[in-house]
Amino acid sequence: MRARTLIKNISVVNEGRITIADLLIDNRLIQKIGSINSESKATVIDGTGKYLFPGIMDAQVHFREPGLTHKGDLYTESKAAVAGGVTSFIDMPNTIPNALTIDILNEKYRIASEQSLANFGFFLGVNSDNIDEVLKLDTTKLLGVSDDGLYFTKKGNLLADNPETMEKLFANCKAIIVIHSEKEQMVEENESFYREKYGENIPIEFHPLIRSEKACYEATKRAIDLAGKYNARLHILHLSTEAETHLFRNDIPLQQKNVTTEVSVHHLWFSDKDYKRLGSLIKWNPAIKTEKDRLGLLKALLDDRIDIVTTDHAPHTMEEKQKPYFESMSGAPMVQHSLNIMLEFHKQGLISLEKIAEKMCHNPAILYRIEKRGFILEGYFADLTIVDLHSSWAVSKENILYKCGWSPLEGTTFQSKVTHTFVNGNLIYESGLFNEEVKGKALAVADN
Image (cartoon, rainbow, N blue to C red; front, side, top):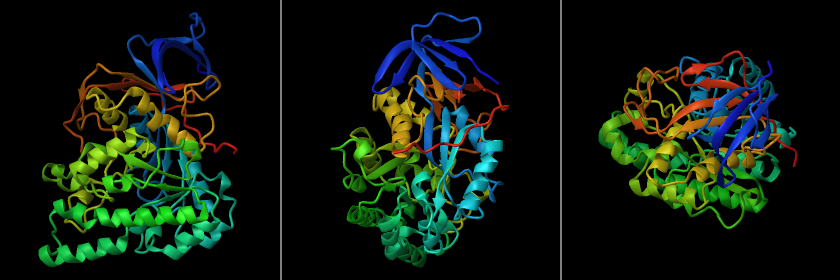
């Protein structure tokens, strides 16, 4: 199906500028940007007063398929994603089975090609058990290798707790090494301390003291030191402390960085004061920490020590979340609402629209070398998001699209709304309606 669309008179947010222009989409691509006469063969969308972003790229999600589809799956969570303006995602390896082999990775790609409404990519999992097999592969075409979430399968799966494994990986892996940076040994010591005081029902407000600043900082510093030793390409996931932000550079362009990092939207939106109101619904690993940490992360995002914004979208059932401390699952669903959160910060005068596009669209494409996406440029795939900055709405059970059916943002009013989402030139979402006939495409790694 060939989709030809003309978007007229819209404010285009791209590469540090906002310009009013027309944009022609044809045969999956952006064909022309500028002043374009109306065409009888094109569907016309009036963009007057609205803003056009490159499609949001969420480079850290847990969409749960295969093996955990009672929480979410590639169809339901990608549908929520496109409703939030997210046109591409990269999924983590902690499915069942863990994505520790190319065969399992390829199976995830196959399922996504049949189910996902958004474009998709997957990290290959790496731990002490499969590192030798991973290092036999040509890793140059992988989006990255990651240990994230694998600690849920068994203790000792975090690279941060296995310096010998991490050193071997950094010395030999050609792909981006994407890690969850906490020292599990420190976390376990803190767990023992609070368990002695409170038993199994530790109050949730101690979560950021158990998964502490020190456990994060020391793991991140050691990983950065090792990456420097071997000139390895390292990406630290979901930074959660102000202290860690000072370990990262902003004196060189992203293209020249060997060590990069991200912030997930929940670490920008919530702080430890919200545990009293939301309890285990905002239990994440690494933990949401102090207001000082929240503000420090935002500052580092603005001054380019932090490179991209992600969600760490991790749906669990409400039953799984509401168990006692040690049994309550960590993580929550966010992919439908990440752009709205960042636009709310814009409304508060905290970040420009151009910076949002840089951190959520341009930089993920640069960091992971994703071909012909992340920018509004002629010849690029037409992954595009239209937003209305003057349309308020409230998050409610009726408009939450996650399979798990809840959000820690329920009751929050946002002042901006996603109105249209294009994936590969196809209008997949428009004002609450979906086109499910066309599926997303696998993200391709560009040649160096």
